[in-house]
Amino acid sequence: MTNANSGYGRVAARVPPQAWFGVSAVFHYLGPSFAVLLFPAVGVLGVAWFRVASAAAAFCLIASPIRTLRQADWKGRLLLVGLGLCLAVMNTSFYLALDRLPMSLVAAMEFVGTIAVALWGLRTGRNLIALILTVLGVAVLIDVKWASDPMGLFWSALNALLFVGYIVLGHRAAANGADQGVERLGAAMVIAFIALMPLGFVQAVAVLDQPLLILAGIGVGLCSSVIPYICDQLAMSRLPRASFALLLALLPATATVIAAIVLTQIPSFRDLVGIALVMAGVAIHRPLR
Image (cartoon, rainbow, N blue to C red; front, top):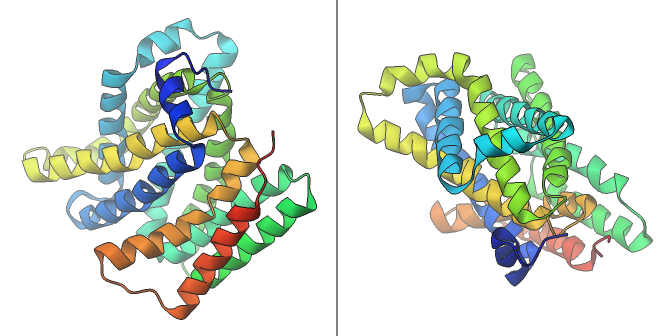
């Protein structure tokens, strides 16, 4: 539970956890949209490096990752290393999959893993109905077209598996409140930066003389790994794991709304039906305590 007397704890307690998740959901799609635009100029691994590097730098300013690493016991350090490696490989495999496959397919495969987490925490028939509605809604929203790119499918499957790991490890990081969760997230991001340094820096260094690309890369990091991950911690500190996993079904609906507003891609009747099913599932879902 969140400690309401702490800094992030007070912030988390003032706003419903679903609202924090909503902010995270918006940036969950803004970040990748910016990243895909940078792929031709920076390279996939270079963009992944900029994302993690700028996020690690931001967390060094708003948290104390080095102190968190020093003060953690061996179990805490194991959690931080696990979360950090998970973030590094998950973000990289997500971008490698997007470089080869449509985002709809990658998102669909990513959601399969979250279904398993939601099923693990089911305790009532009401929540089973909620889960069925959200799955139907996502199936309607995402017109999945299978791909024949084995490497792309491998990266997408790896991202889906590690996304489940992020949910599990992220909840453990937030178990003692939002403050410790954000501090642990910062330490994990520094570990992710160290792990990714040998791979992504080679591509990133080629554009270090282009300020606009550097600023764009920093923007990707802030939109993809700082704002949404902090909001996730604020939500995770107050929501059980299964409830958070079910809320992830909102992501396709969020993507549809963002596309309509930013890209003037007006949703079809099918899209509206899918959004309605997802919203209905979330509405009748009863959080587990």
